[in-house]
Length: 131
Image 1 (tube, rainbow, N blue to C red):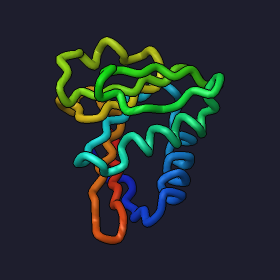
Image 2 (tube, rainbow, N blue to C red):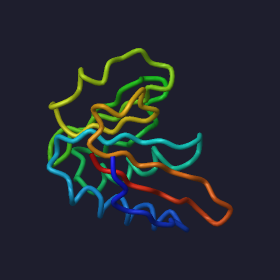
Image 3 (cartoon, one colour):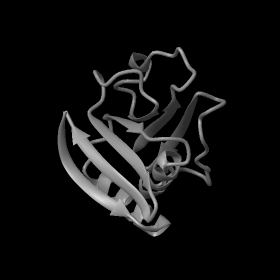
Image 4 (tube, one colour):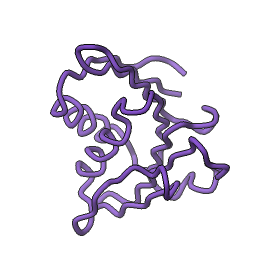
């Protein structure tokens, strides 16, 4: 994977802007893998990405830590949000069904993008890699 973008997110609004800009680049069937320690902003990023895609109803984006996979229907298609930290679920099950965001991926083979979140004293550094 090659590094295609790096930026510093100082505020939550920076995260929202980054998510809005990122999803504009997508076709809607990509696998986006997310890495970062607990509290690094992975779920917050997905929440803003889903908001940018126009969720049906008033769906709230929640961490999939306990459900393992959450499905959101948006104006741009289905969005799957998976947490593989403690799951044995196979990513292949969701590929091609819509946009897939995966927290704690087991590998990068199926990732079209990898976004790494790093917590810094002044905010978050994000690095975007593309296959």
